[in-house]
Image: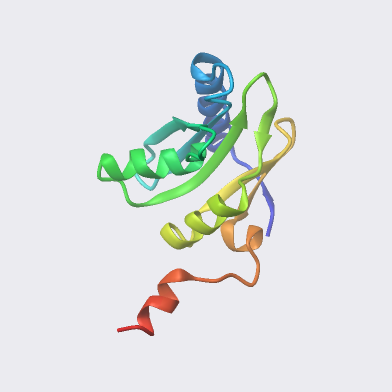
Length: 137
């Protein structure tokens, strides 16, 4: 279910927007993301584009959080550079968020009217990697 976001989630949008303004330059870094851990700590990151592929900003945030021992992200948002505002996660990021944080909420919609949705609503009838792993043991 989509819900209007509380002020604490607007803080995530501001954090991602600030990172996009400060660090997104050229074609290599065009999206910033911010996530909140259960502790309230905010983790940010930017995408790493390369012609051979590269991680989206959301995946960079997941890795940065793990590198700090944070494994309980509860909300995430991505923001495009150049004032593009809130952007939805791609399919790969949706799957990764579901597999790593099945209860995470994702901020989507416009920057002026953002809303928060559970990852399961953004990826209906999901393939859950962990469920498949239990069958192979």
